[in-house]
Length: 196
Image (tube, rainbow, N blue to C red; front, side, top):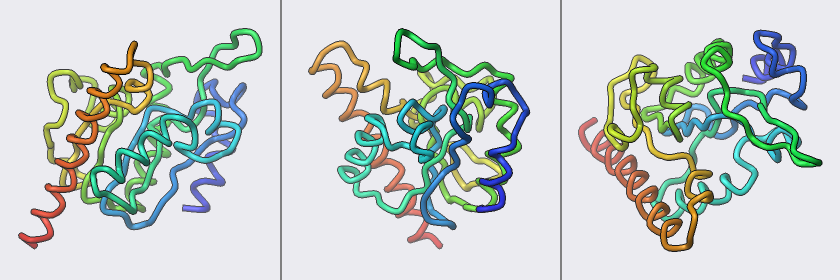
């Protein structure tokens, strides 16, 4: 993993390297039973060089604790921050399909090293990176799929979507649904452990 992380800093597979501070690789135990894959590093992650250290990461950590899950590996489908400048702020911009595909040579070996039992895709971009372009998060949220890299892959919303909800009631409902999705992941791992 250290060699892969170092090599990613020299990646020129797309144009994101021109403006991003650095490539941000995943972190956590390796091997890990669960890998959480987000879309891309945000502003705070790009500056710090660590995945999920911003507001979405704080919400994810709280939800994992509420779901009774620990020791997860967290990473992103795209390793560099794509943004547009608005004054002094750098605002997240959704990565293109070609940028997601451009990062597959980093994501796939990262997952092969970690060897998860379950992959949880956080948001549509991560789901498409792992499950393919035909995956539709709204219709297939919470379903489990077989995958060559892990016994199961599932997808749910990205924590940032909960943070962007327009009011407190919707944020609360979104958070509860997110925790329920994570509890389903924990139950699946428990059943796999009991069966094995």
